[in-house]
Length: 154
Image (cartoon, rainbow, N blue to C red; front, side, top):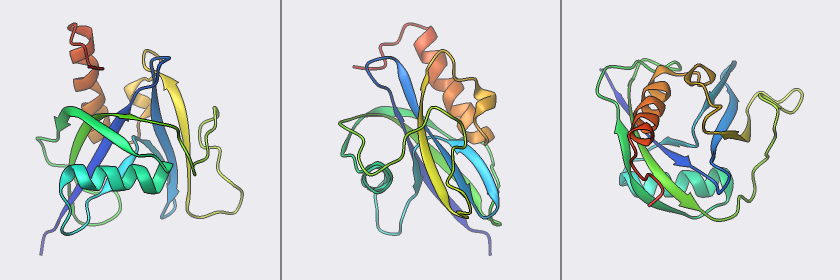
């Protein structure tokens, strides 16, 4: 039976025009993506994104607006499911309970499952820095709106 994997992610931009990204190590892979993760059964999209930020960053967020939903097929890198990603622009307070680093993949030694966050200047984040094509497409959509003068932080 084919399964769907619904993922929700947030673009969190700080006052210095930096976006928060997450470097992760899981199931033998190292990858870079936006904060967020899998929707749990019974959750709505916004509720799931709020839970993910609280779990990963210790932060309550305000969801400002929808940015992008995948509109093509993406197969999961981890299993045989189809991944659907929904991306939102979010605003939040102070990051708590999460490790921050300026260095990519700054993982703790001998830890099979790890996560560390980085702030990256929006104009310096190259889509190639993101591991998954789904995230690259969402970032392109976001940056296209920015280039066309849309005030994305309202």
